[in-house]
Length: 294
Image (cartoon, rainbow, N blue to C red; front, top):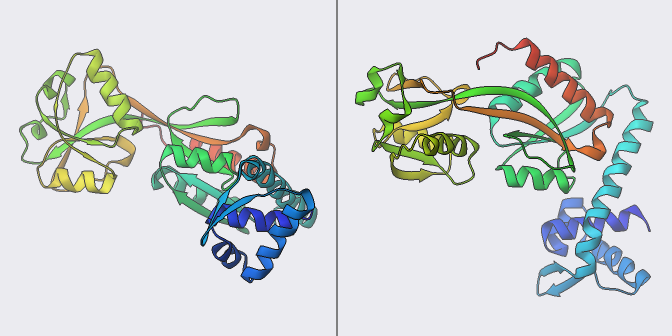
C-alpha cells in the first residue's frame, strides 16, 4: 500500500469531498480520485459513500482512518529523524490550545531554543483539542484541567486562583476580597457549559450552598469581559487571564482558594518523539522560571 494513496484517502476524509481533498494536496481531482479508487479496487471494498459532491466514510473507511493517520504521522517522524539526524535543524510542530495565554508563553520559550522549527497553533475547546491529538492533527495540546486517560501523557504547567471581576461602580468592586456568600443572588455572567473555570467555580458555590443569579452564558472570554465592562453582571476568570481595565476591578475570594490548572498533553505513544520531548522540556524550563501566582 503506497503512502500517496493513504494521503489521498486522508485528504478526502478530512475535507469531506474529492475536490476539497485534491485542493488541500495541490493535486487535480482526477488524480486523487484515481488514487482512492485504486486503493478500493486493490482490496475489493468501498472506503467512501459518494453522495453528490460529498464523500462520507464507509464502515471500513472509519476503521482505516486512525490507522492511516498513525502511519502518515510515523512516516513524518521517521523522515524528520533521518533527514536532520536528531539535530532539529528544521521541522514542524503543531499545537492545540483552549486559549492563547500559556501556549504563547511556551512557544516563545521553545523558539528561543529551536528557532528553526515551524510552529502552528489551533485554538478550540477541550474536546476539539483532545480529538485533534487522537487524530494526529496536532502533536501537543495545552488544556485547562486534568483529563485522565491512558491514551495521553500530561504535565502540569501552571496553577492559578479563580477570581471574580466587576464593573468599577458595582458595590462589590470596592472590596479587594469577598467570601463566596457575598455572591448570593448577585447577577453573574458564566462561560459556556464545560468551561474549566466555570466547573471549578460552580463546585465551590455548591459546597457552600451559594446561589448567584445567572444572567447569561457567554461563549468567549472577550465577550464575557465586554459584558462586565457594560455592567451586565459579575464575571469569573482565572487570575492569569484577567486583563486590567480602568472600568474593571478584580476581587479575590477569601474562602479556600478556587484554582484552575494548565496541563500539556500528547499521545502517550508519542511522548518520546524528539520534537514533542523538546517542547515539553522547554515548557518545563519556562514553568520553573516564571513567578508563582498561586
